[in-house]
Image 1 (cartoon, rainbow, N blue to C red):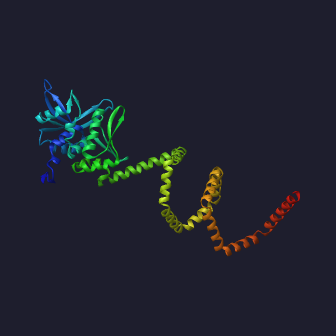
Image 2 (cartoon, helix red, strand yellow):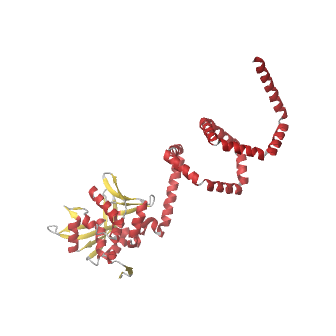
Image 3 (cartoon, rainbow, N blue to C red):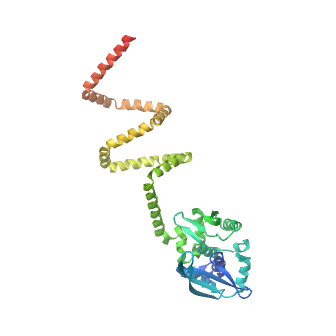
Length: 371
């Protein structure tokens, strides 16, 4: 057990300055050649002025193995026509930087090989992520901006993540350039590996695993929900059509049926409880909108008449014995009640019933004479 900057750690490699240097070279750092024959090599690093605290955190490690100098500068972007304030770290010529130049550069181009890649420990990995990685608060995924590397190098990085850390990364392409994508499940695994090595100024890149990011996550969630709602309101017909097509897919219908079956009793109990609490309000609403409900039910029935009748027939055929038994039990149980109802109905509609009976008897008598 050793101590570093007041922090207790089991492995000295966790706080190895070389890990910070290697991780930075995978990210935003680069090696600059100078001198008459381009033989003098030095390490350089440039960050936005907003990330000055992060660069100073790196310098705390790097100054143990390099002689460094930090300066502030500005750079004019010709395309965007803006001036950006930046902070730069420059080292003096050092044999360690010369050795890394041979490992990282080939014909003036930065490349990755297996030897240097597999030396990355959690600290170096954290620095690389803080430089070139980004956390998407909407999808809760991680993207590594490895656009400068070839497809073979991307496959090498992907294999490293799987073999050393059991993380399944995917290679995606955009505008002819490749980058690494880590889904939510593997993102949580990755962030838990590096979280103890991320500086305070970069806690926002730890996403959902860090408590300080809860407010930002909630803000993103509300923003997305607002955007979705606005789109649905502006494209109501398109949205309803898409939802209908989606729900008619066989696997979706099966999943929805499983969910309904699993939660049937729970939903029934909740519906009963809700009805008891709001019975007066529900009755009043139904009374005020009775005509509208009747019209909507009639419209639905007319549009889906054949489907409804087929469903009823199929259900009756499948459950015929059960339904007849229920009907018989109900009749026996409510015999007196039904008799009283029929009597009251007859008394209320006596003239209409007798008139219908006379008309029916005349029709029946005529048919019988014709035969």
